Length: 266
Image (cartoon, helix red, strand yellow):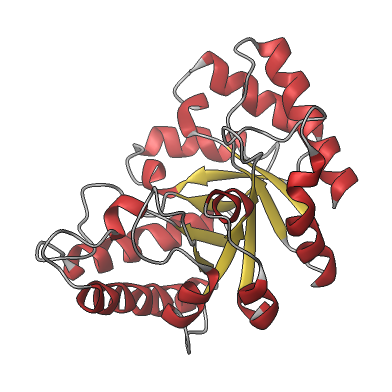
């Protein structure tokens, strides 16, 4: 198992708390960080160079927040030329940073707009993931479509839907975020039926979407832990949750305790 931590890129811009979180992740011994791809797309070359220097201490093996808000991917305003241009630019950049897995969540961007049918938006999304697959084959990067809970979007809310959307593709599959599963009171039945499509994991304590801690009710993770162990999953799992601490000392303690909790559970 490789343990990662979802981190903003603000530590590159000098944000003190983001820097403290980055330092804590490195000191705790996480295997990688997961950064927002859309934020990387807005970085000037000087910041990219600074980021590459920072990633010498810990690799960036995954990225989330795939598309920036400026690119329309579904509905009447969608622009596939911009989608393809973005993929053409960002997948090679991600590969140059050592990224292995990209996460396509973007709940707002993929939401079914008023006046549009589910079938039409499904077809839009299928064209997008086919474009992803085409560009991913050039770089060897794998892309995971993230099922999101119903408060964040109204399409691709389950693992089974993501499997259907990505059927037949070679470099685009799906993933599980235990927070979204818990938020929608779902089961892991579809994961057991389609284990070959499981590419990546996210986790957080579902009450408040917090970083896992020793104070958590561990029983809440039971079904997720059972799934991971039953499938003998041995890939990447990233923490994607909020911290309670607002000072460097507290951040370090929380980040380190989180890794201990994950290793003990999994």
